[in-house]
Length: 257
Length: 353
Image 1 (cartoon, rainbow over the protein chains, first blue to last red):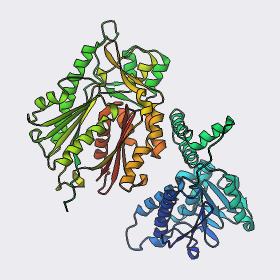
Image 2 (cartoon, rainbow over the protein chains, first blue to last red):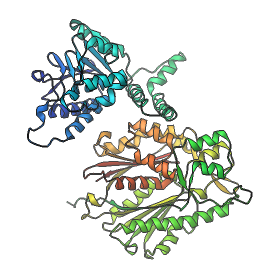
Image 3 (spheres, chains in turn cyan, yellow):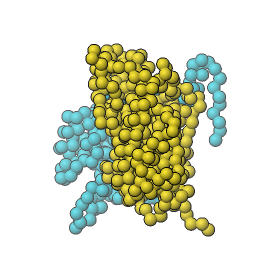
Image 4 (cartoon, helix red, strand yellow):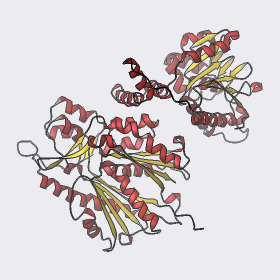
């Protein structure tokens, strides 16, 4: 798979996706949207990686959408935004742990992307904003996701002012999970990967989905969803082995593939 | 080299139900049910109303007991009524007249009669006396799919010969309500309805005429065979539904679906339309979580459940009709049909537009 705007490096079960347009602050263009979705689909199909790390090339994470994608003399339409959200959703629903590793600017679509991940590790010089309102358009499906992280009031303040938030404040607000000096960035990403420990793809996918849907579904309906999900989780070999261990019985050795 | 086989398409659908509908509260009041647990099954079922054919209450306000003979007679009477309506509506919006039909399959699990429903409906709707026919009885909610399979195989083997499927369920002819929790659960769920589908393989048809039927994949889970079954009680059919059934279906649902998709080189994300049997809230949740479907994916499944209850073998055709009415399908889209029922049985089919 030939990639123009992103790069992927795979090692030890970790696929690192680097947004790779450093001269444009890794701004999102049509090609990047397509490549990101294709790559996520390929990672899902391969099922070889446990973790996906998303980062930016150079000194920014991602500065948002590249406005040069809109032709100057044609009527703009929303199809590109629809494709962009589909790519975000594909990343958000990958059956593996996803970590956004953020150094430098993380703005607009860049923040939307970071919010689709399971964890956000940021350097002390990272900054965050949904600046679109200042420019007269909308901060995408950040309107759907941001308040779930930092609360409605703060999301409105941030999204309606377009103000820039520094890394330390982002940590305090709950937008970032771990803050690190620039020199320790790679170590902090590695430590975050290690923190996820043993990864059971089914358990991750289902738990993530339940957390997400907890904002949308009334309690009585949610219990049913939880039971359906838990039924699937406890049918896995991992859970059966766990029970055998609890009974101090031998656990079959995993087959070497 | 022989030319590529022409795939059958579902070119028309027609649906019908008895005239009278009941809300869940209407039914609790009618049967004088004040058991808290049973009331909860009714009110938390995600069903707003169901169409049923129930007797008028007696002078003292209680419901008369319908014996087995009366229930069987009701199955036949209502089936012939709503079955004929569904067939007529299906043909109205198709280029075929009833006398042009070459094959007629009829699916039902809510009553037994011999001669079968086809024998009555061929006469009452005016089909030819040399039409090929099949009555598929007792297969349960999944049987809509078994009927589509049979009808589409006839159509594929006989190009340009129109084949009609009718799924006809009079669930109010198969009930025992003795105020136990078991019959309470079952009676909180099912409704009466009929749906007809016209299937034909004709190379001049296009995506605008309806979806092609590409293939089917079945799964039968023997370990759970006794978890969904009819039992004869006091000369009436009483349906038994094990509590674990929704989860068992969820546990096994990936097997046939992934086999089906793999045969055609597809992934779940390639499927734009999921047409899932409205079995009940729990089983829809289980399917959603095991296949990773969204609420949007099952919107018609939910709306058919909400507006009709579980209408057994007719429900996937109702959902397919809802999808058609919505007008969102595009040429090149893929769809998966899923129905599940006794066996325990999961039946799936692949559609393309």
